[in-house]
Amino acid sequence: MKKAVEINDLTVFYRDTLALDNVSVSINSGKITGIIGPNGSGKSTLLKGILGIIPVKKGTVSFFGSSLEKYRSKIAYVPQRESIDWDFPITVEEVVAMGRIRPKKWWSRTTMADREIVKETLKKVQLSEFVNRQIGQLSGGQQQRVFLARALAQEAELIVMDEPFVGIDMASQESILSIVQKLRDSGKTVVIVHHDLSVVAEYFDEVILLNKKLIANGPISEILKSENIEKAYGMTLLLNRK
Amino acid sequence: MNDLLMILTACSVAIPASLLGVLLVSKSLVMVGDAISHAVLPGIVVAYLLSGTKDSVPMLFGAAITGFLTTFLIDFLRKKWRIQEDAAIGFTFTFLFALGVLMIAIFAGKNSDLDQECVLYGDLETSILDQVIVGSYLYGTRAILQLLPLTITLLIVIIVGFKGWKVWAFNPQFGSFIGIPIQAFQLVLMLLLSIHAVLSFESVGVILVVGLLVLPAATALQFSGTLARTFLYSACIGIVSCVFGVFLGKWINISISPLIVCVNGLLFLISIFVLPFKKSIRSS
Image (spheres, rainbow over the protein chains, first blue to last red):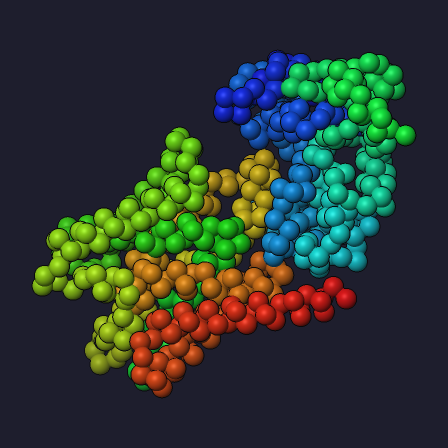
């Protein structure tokens, strides 16, 4: 199987505290991979470390065999909802249109083709009727879909989502999962950071269990069976499952 | 004629201020704007002492340098010494500002036209006496002619870089991830702010200019919905407040620049009270 991301010995410190300890793991292409761990387990750190958003102490990361710099334009990052200023004066359409910005020519005007892509992606995430809404006037799930739409508009090969299911309604969750599955079926690689192995995790093809160190990784069916969950969480998580 | 000149002079300060303010307020950089407009003072004084004139070229250099120094110092305190941001800003600008006030008191106190009163509060009424007349034709006040190029530059910077400003203010992490030079935007903004602070201190002073930076933008943000409209509304509010301020000042015979800021404050309060009403209309 082709590796989308290969991570070797990734170690990250926040000031003097160790946040991620020698993590070596790879993410297969064309799959939905969940990065799962309790609060403070370094899952967002792993994501940001991989994407070069925060500095890493040591370790290397490659994307389909090439460096981040070479592969950057094919990666879309969907930020955590809480990291966004929802009062900012910007409409749904404007956020999605950001996905069409060409970094080398960021000042150039949005072309007709770009507008068409934005329109299409908004249709895909079922937000067509909200194009001109200010983003603060949407529900949590709709807000999450705006950023997913931006990632779609980027036409990336690798889509990375940071806690997309926090504080959103069931309908939005389903809609996001179905879009994500369509992406996978069309050959894209999706990485989702999520905090537990509850129901949504069953939609993932593979998971990486993390608690500062790599606890386990592999197909979801195997991970759910193994005792690794206890190592990462203790018993609570099993009890949370139906 | 004098009224018109007064309004135009006030607007020449208020329009670029209200545009710069949109960038500051939407990115929660109000404190930094406050800091820059105060911290340029020692730069102004040093430039004045070295050149001996209130000519704008050396002053602009002085201001640009202190503007950058402020930004650098705040960043340095925050990142290297891990001082929380508001404390770093508070330290930097009050220190530099106090330094500037002291320098005026020591070096520029006597027989010069750079005094504390002028720097702190400005004086719109006297600044319009500084007229540029060529032949027998009045071209405007010095303030207008100095601030006009800044306003035009600012407009070009905002319009050409609009997408970039939007990303910078809204989601800089995204911007730097896809490879837009996000850091440069902050530097450009600080440079323009420093220049604005220097060119406007004689008319409105370094304290009240903060009101002109922040208030129109804050009011506009209450009901704009998009960044483009925020710029437009903010500039309009700036102009309206100048017109009101000048006429009110004439009418009750009181200093004009604080009145303009007060009008802005009132408009902001009104916008807050009107907003819940507007929101309920929009979401229904």
